[in-house]
Amino acid sequence: MDAITVEASQQQWHTELVKRAKQSVEAIPLSQALGRVLAEDLTAQSDMPPFRKSPYDGFVIPYQSQVNRFKVIGLIGAGEVFDGPVAQGEAVRIMTGAPIPDDCDTMIMQERCDFDGEYITVRGEIKQGDNIVPQGEECSTGEVVIKAGTVLDSGVIAVAVGLGYATVPVYTTLKILVLTSGREIIPVGEPLTAGKIYNSNLFMLTNLLAEHGFQDIMTYHVSDAPELLDREIAKVQELSQQADIIISTGGVSVGLFDSMPAIYKAIGAHTLYNRVLMRPGAASYGGLITRKSGEYTLCFGLSGNPTAAYNGFHLLVLPILRFCQGYANTELMSVTLPLGAAIHKKNPFDRYVQGVITYTAQGAVFIPNRVFTSSALLGLAQANGLAKLEQGKHSYEIGDRIPVLLLKNHN
Ligand SMILES: Nc1nc2c(c(=O)[nH]1)N[C@H]1C(S)=C(S)[C@@H](COP(=O)(O)OP(=O)(O)OC[C@H]3O[C@@H](n4cnc5c(N)ncnc54)[C@H](O)[C@@H]3O)O[C@H]1N2
Ligand code: MOO
Image (tube, rainbow, N blue to C red; front, top):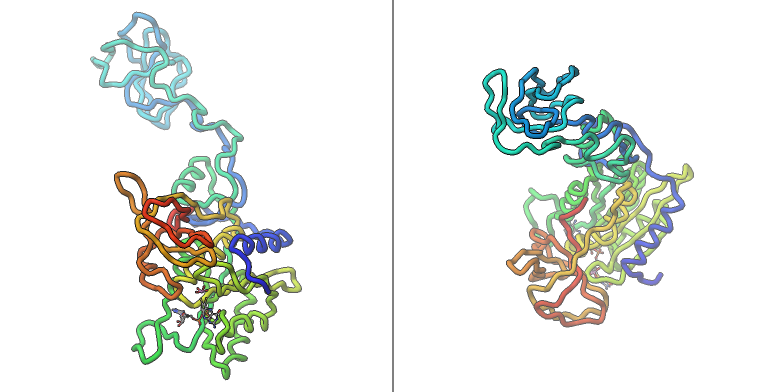
């Protein structure tokens, strides 16, 4: 099987996914909706605001040219309605947010009024129509206010509540199985013995998923020990039945104990690609399990090397996860930024370089991580951008403008 580009891998997934059913939908209370993805448009059930209202505390009047003294005939607090007539020369005291009486067209802040308990005298010129928030200023009944595919964050939930929605239709959450692999990998907390390393990718992947709103995660570690393989395959098979997505790290290259492609094959996956034309992260696998029921599980094998796995997650996995979860925006945002340091490196394939986007008086700059090789770990602690170096271009100088994916700004 030939190696494919990042873009071709994404295209291949989309071709496969077009044939499959959409994620199912459930209605949930807004109190539980944070981070979920809206499955239907939310429309305004009334105008917003639903009535003409006062933006300040003060007095409302029917405007009359040359008149600045008015008899105060009533009081309206927020939540109250003044339904009596207001004649010329009369005013009604009004509080912020209260509805404007039908007869009134002008509102005056109380700081401009001398009020003797019966009459107000207004200082300065009165402008007809001042300080009235019109009904429907923001939207009219029936307008689509929030589109399907939007993430329910604090702002969106506040709007949904303001529109009167108590529950919202959302896509059911994807169930994700994260597999780590390798006999050398030990849980953090145990003493580090010769040849072993801690399972940093487990935390990297599960937390990346959580940061991107994917919370329903199972985990399992495959040792890659040949004598345990059958048992481990059986366990992965069992867990995979409940998973919409499997993401594994390690064991995907050509080493003697690189068993992940064999495991995917054993659990019924059909391979889409097993090598990607990028560095780091060339050792990446994509496969699909289709069950008799029509249900399916997407399988993403990432490299065990931390930088390669981190890049692979963002480039190969995340846009497809977002698509499957129903997000309207599936891609990470890309910006063109000047390089803050030169990079001289052979690039036989597109190379993705982690780094930090910083802000200077001249604007944003991308500073590449000092070490951005496949096995680098420490750069993950600071990376907020992923720059793309073009295949065949081996020298980049300070100030060269390059495309950078924003790793932390997602919606
Ligand atoms: N002869 C060849 N050797 C290699 C090739 C090749 O084409 N021919 N490809 C290289 C490339 S490219 C990469 S990338 C790695 C990919 O290796 P695997 O995905 O099979 O991963 P492992 O061998 O299991 O591990 C690589 C590295 O990462 C460490 N690791 C693994 N899991 C974790 C974890 N959960 N947390 C932290 N670190 C982890 C592991 O100990 C290894 O050091 O293969 C090249 N070799
Ligand atoms: O997949 Mo490897 O990361 O190209 O180094």
